Length: 262
Image 1 (tube, rainbow, N blue to C red):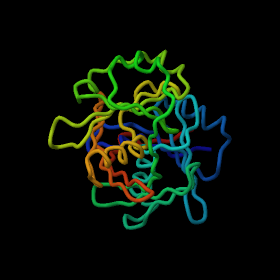
Image 2 (cartoon, helix red, strand yellow):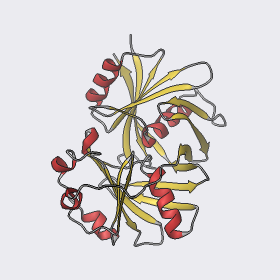
Image 3 (spheres, rainbow, N blue to C red):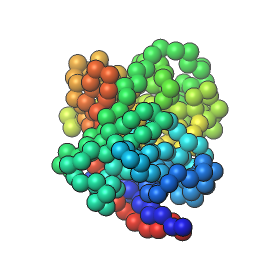
Image 4 (spheres, rainbow, N blue to C red):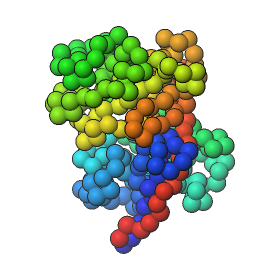
């Protein structure tokens, strides 16, 4: 059997920016081992597997090494493919059944808005090695199930950080969000996301981290709507709107490759 597969750059308005994801459209669920092998073959930060059911689409996400519970950019990419291929009309929401519950994506002009759970960071026991790994002084340190959260003094520090990925991967969570206020008026905050613990040294543009970064900066800036800039090498622009229990994450997407998985 063969399956349609797409390479999409998410949180980007032009190719070769943002975060690349593979989106594989399935007619029925496949074995976990097969999906993990496909993800390893694609060798992108995430490969999404989309299966149509009666009312919603089943959606699962795999890095090259593990399945994850939540992924923003691959969800955005999946919704983009469903609209681009005509499986869904542009005015229809994309509803996904996932390990993080039902997630909804809606098209808003060139932007796609994701309705995601809020994931607050709390002060927690942070390994002393974390500061050594990142080589920077922290204004704040906390964590949630997405990873450690570290605020530093400036955007310059975020941009110049060169973590010890081997050591970071050995820490209990193996993932860290580093953030600072933006130095420009175009954005409210900047971030980077390092995740060697799940097989991705640096994720270029991370929707799920903004489930935490959005509420964090909402309290600090007193704003419900913000523009984030993930300052990885590829870069990513992520619009955030914080609700009572949910975080609404918006981005653009571009299909780079469409093909057939044999």
